[in-house]
Length: 310
Image 1 (cartoon, rainbow, N blue to C red):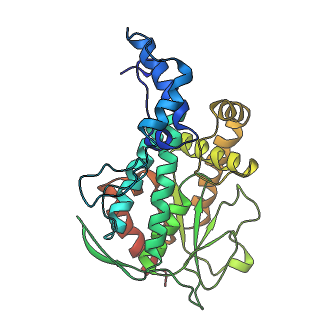
Image 2 (image 1 turned 60 degrees about the vertical axis):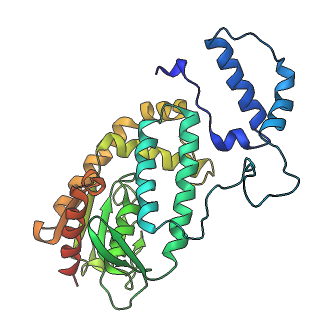
Image 3 (image 1 turned 180 degrees about the horizontal axis):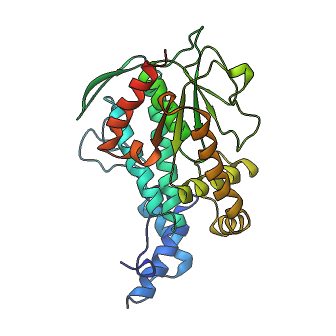
């Protein structure tokens, strides 16, 4: 259905007293525009109708057969969703966010949904350990800890390439914490954006014992767009992944910085490729990590590489 021939109603917006009446009014305007339905109700009456229909009150709850209130759950959550189920939903929402980035209304709802899913996942992750069952088998996921006496692996990537996802995967594989920017000897790896961010950890005299490296690579156009999103959130004091930057802001930044950013993407890759011998580095693509079939194989490659480093 063409975008100008559809109206998307967000459930949470519709049942919210502050936004529900306006959402209803917008929906009615759309219906009138697209159909020949007579105008039986005046616009000023719509908020009253909304309160009557959606914001109803039940005087005395009945044990059975009663109508649920608009904001009342219809299922029993005494048995919560599993970590794997939530992770699957988060993955689906991420793909949808990429697909519907052009529609601000849908995008905003999807970002809120994903944030709520991530909160549930974080809560479950605190229950250590987690026994996970999925189509690939059974495994234990533990809360990572710090372990003294380690020589960390360098984890290098251009910003916007999925470094947090890589850190989460490394921590789940090893059960040991990772770090960012600065070297620590109680973590399994240290994320670095060097030379893009010049103060991050890099090869040199004081890090000469850090002889193993993971390079995470992402399709440059997507990585540059993701990098801008993080820049926009930081500059505007917005929580990460809570909203999509305005299209106008992205296009302005892209047009002003594109050549510098694509050169930085190339420089970053070439720097790290030449900094370590092939036997001491592993190259992982963001796209393969997210692929349903290739992802598990890449995780196994990564696990074997880390095992050979300690």
